[in-house]
Amino acid sequence: MRCFRFLAAGNAASAYGVYLNLVAFNLFVYEVTDSALQTGLVMAVRLLVGLIGGVLAGRLAARLDLKRMMITAETTQALGLISLVVFHRFTGDWLLYAFVVVAGLCSNSSAVALRTAVPAMVGADKRVWANGLLAGCRSVAMVAGFASAGVVVSLFGHTAAFLMAAGTFALSAANLAWLPLRTRTESEEAGTVEHESSAPGAAGAEDERPTRARRMAALALGGLPPLVLMLVAVRAVDGFGSSAHNVGMPIQSRALDPDDPAVFMSQFWTTWAIGNLIAQRLTTRYAERRGAPSDTAFAVGVMVMSAAFILAFAGLPAVLALPVIVLAGMADGFTENAFVSRLQTLPEKRRAAAFGLAATTENTAFGLGMVISASLLERFSPFGVVGAMHGAALVLGLGFLLVRRRLAAASREAVRGAADAAPESKREVNQ
View 1 (cartoon, rainbow, N blue to C red):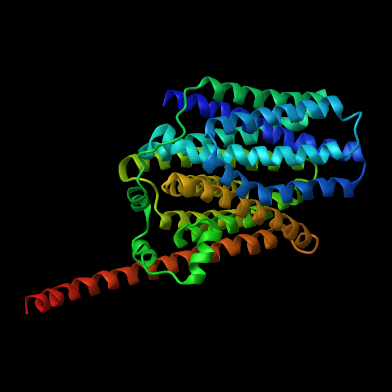
View 2 (view 1 turned 90 degrees about the horizontal axis):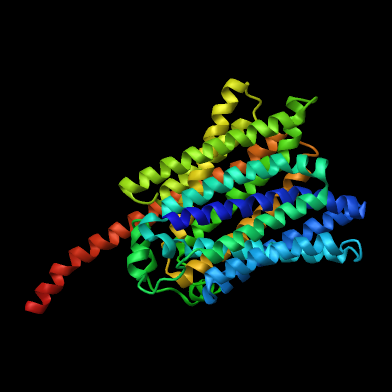
């Protein structure tokens, strides 16, 4: 546990560098190119890398040493930023695109490798605690990165921001290299792990003989169980809805406080982070007593989170808005932990594929959502856009609960039928 706490601290430093660099790099691209088109193209490349990076990272994580993979990813990001500082004056704009590709691939690879390795590092029974610690540290790092980025860039310039971010990646890589981490387990049994958090009825449905089309689809999707694919889909639509409040936040902030819109944004994300931290603590305590959150709890959490974000943009007075934002942060933190912990119950080879697929679908949904929400915000209010896009997550979460309930009912019927048929078979044998 002590080693993992050091790992979480190093991961938080890396996350701070990611969010600091996210703001600084976007400002830098516009300043260097002096072109909104070029800035948009760089962001489009970043989106494209996100689409393919997750699946690629999943395949690499299934084959490579996970610790070495994380160290390489962190080191490469640090070297990429240093190269940008040193060579951007002597190269064309192609260096910007190259950096976006490298940073996107490395970020995906590091995240997928870490999530895949958590059960081996701390044990399956401690994975909820470990995921909560990682998520809580990242939440604090995100708020700190976004809050300090403007100050660092305005006071010290882009070079200082890039070097600071590079330093956080180098620190994370050194921390990983120093820690005695175990990232693979050979004793993990697929049947036991799958049973741990499978929904009632899922096993019965998955034991049915698949059709040829279903086998081909399973192969294309990494051989993952249908229930896991449904969870990934819900998580992706959750990301689709989240893009709306991220894009709509500046507009909502300006509408609420035209003189100082940054105040609302700062209060929003700080309050959200507090809720996220509370959720990680409560989820860990719950897991110690009753085990990891169920698939049903995850879907309900997505619905609560979506409803809370919609209310947060409804123009409520501060005394009501702040508790709603805390609730949104709590539900956001809970669903992340529940989702990651569920995928970590898969066997190691499938686990890497699942996290790779999840990264790709989340990046795709979030990027597509940003494009759609940006176009909708030209005509509609932030409340309307956030309500529509988070409403999609509400509907899909409800649909997941209904499908899961039907699977459970079908499984109970199958078990009851098998139990009724057993005595008849026995009588026939005796006769």
